[in-house]
Image (cartoon, rainbow over all chains, first blue to last red; front, side, top):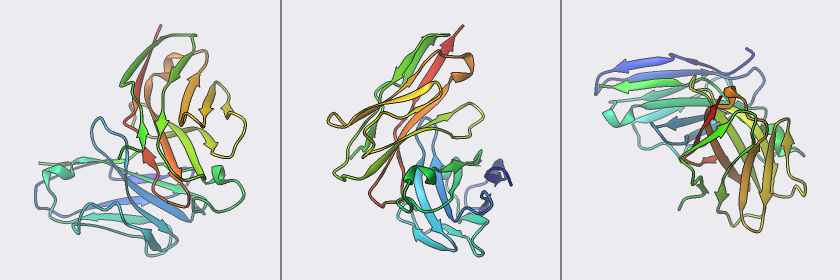
Length: 121
Length: 114
């Protein structure tokens, strides 16, 4: 597609439930990122994929959070046993390649989706 | 430690005037990149401008320019001829070395007054 697509745009769930958030990156973009943005704050890095593999998952807050990208395009962020503190907007972004590759690193600018707003009651 | 600091929670500017949004950063890497993104109320992060640490000239993109002062570790965004549509949150961000986590500041909410 023309941009990064995220579904659902809004998700309301109850504490303890399982949630999946989907990201469809720009076609051909090999790098995919998940960020979390709490109210009034800047986005916080969660995980980065280069192709199918999670190249950097250092931002995942705990083992309730997991993300996959099995075919190197669409990615799913999975949250188990949701807690009220998980309420936030989850942003997905993609870029043509990894940061630092190529002669012009600026060309690997992240393009963000509109986000999935998760509310845990 | 805070890597990106945006000290202005909110800013007001009159339509058609210029405004500067402040950003300071902290890194020991020689190679890094600085970015500004705009986030309107719709929520989508929109890339505005990029400055590489080795770029000698300040980056410009249309009405946006980045006032890069490397010794002071500041990367202020200047918006010229403000428009009502410029009202939004503005985030400064940095990527260091070959790290993949882009660090964002807390943002500045800009309101353009008619």
